[in-house]
Amino acid sequence: MPDESFLRLASRRHVAEYARLAAVFLRPHKPEVKARAAALLRVDPVSLEPITGHIHIWPAHPSSSVIEMAHEKVSVKEMDRFLAVCDRHRGLMSRVQMRNSLAEQVGVVQVVQKLASEHGQWVYGLIEARADVYGHPFDGLEAYLTEQIGLAREDMLKPLIHRRLRQSVYDGVAVKELVTRAECFQEGEDLHHCIGGYAGALSYGKTVLLSLRSSEKLTSMWSSAEISLDDLARPVIRQHYGPCNSPACEAHQAVLKQVVDDLVVGELVARTRWLQRLSWLGYRVAPLVLRGRSFKRKAAEVVARFRPKPEPNFDPDVIQW
Image (cartoon, rainbow, N blue to C red):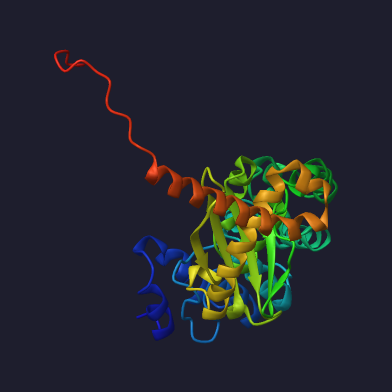
């Protein structure tokens, strides 16, 4: 009979995977080999319990096996960093698995990490979306990726819309308007949600994406918001979520109401040329313009009430179908 540790692991797997599991755990191997194999199987090497609910068995490439990869000389620290990146970037993980060598898989992730630290987290999204990256030889991969990042950088960093908010801090909460694809993707990476996919909507001028922070390290005090503008430039809060789409904290919800008021002013300045020419002073004058327009609209409503209504001018004998 197999030992208890194998049965505990196999009970969570499909029966078709038993042969690969047996090749790793029921044959004599060095402890470090079993530890690397266990890491590739996404389980803790001591308790053999799954780390995540969604399990992948390395490798997906048919020309290699888990135990062959486990015999490669890759340190435990490198494995930990490698698997941590794969957990955060599932798209990158599925592509990296197509490399038939563990050392090469780790090397690809290290290259991507280095480029992301130099150019920003949006690099992960760019590389995940390019299928040609994974068929490129490992030698020269960094130079090729650097070239591709250079080609995409101008588009990623180009503002898709003008910034409307002039104020950056509201009651101790830092608020940033996201206006580039890179900023949107960075926000999605930091909070693990899909705001990066809304970047394309910015160019239509009807969507405002915001990043709110009231702590540098405490992620529970982070949130993102989507606000839409109607034809009259009136803002409506569509979404406001924290990390992993959790509810935003109460402090951020209160601040967002102030931000909405400022967006009305910012949109008026953006649409009015003479206010734009006043530069920063235009943001001081805009509230007065809004009050004047509101007064004019109310006055027109009052006058309309006292105007006699015109009698209908039509022939009652003729029915308009």
